Length: 267
Image (cartoon, rainbow, N blue to C red; front, side):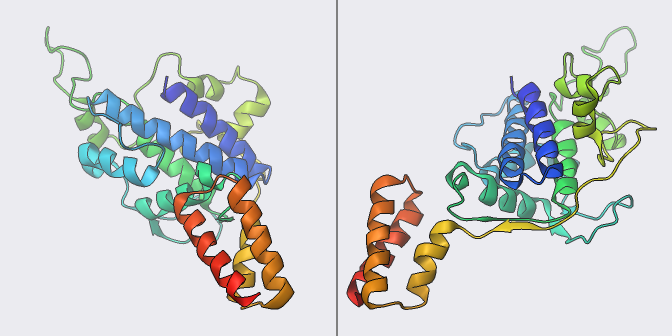
């Protein structure tokens, strides 16, 4: 229920990045990671309640049960030849959620997408997805008939490239050579963690993508420029319309109410 749909979000996110569709890359990347984190929690008998869709809330819950199995800092891989900003996993997830959350689906906050963000997504998906298993259960079931008493956690610690195979895994089907070529390419092109040996990587998009929020340009910037007279009145009227017709996060609504008050005072 969680991992299979997360795999689909992941492939869509990678395709969107390569097609320069930043909004849907961010949206699907956040959905993918949210579902994988919830899967880790549920596999290990923990509740995901209270986490909502917020990666910044869910990730500490996951860290509490996984410890050093997750990366601390996101370091540039040897295969990558793009400018790279080293940042912590938590900082990356917070930035990804800020730009890809539901409240930003209309670009209320705008977004910034960096060249290396696809590779950072790959790193986090790989790291979290391999933990979608009962970490402290035995890898080979109940210990009997001389079977080794190795837990999933111990196997993951000793073998960094170990990925528990999930029956019916959507991602596994896409990686298979029998999968449609377009989907396989979206999933694996420049994916140096999931791609099998011998996969021929082609060109991919590199670049920085950003968009300033429309409401920021039309309302916030006008307030910051201390406009007055007719411009202040027209901007206050626009702010009225926004507050009456667009559902906004509480803190954003509060900000616009304060801006409207200042604009009315200068009109």
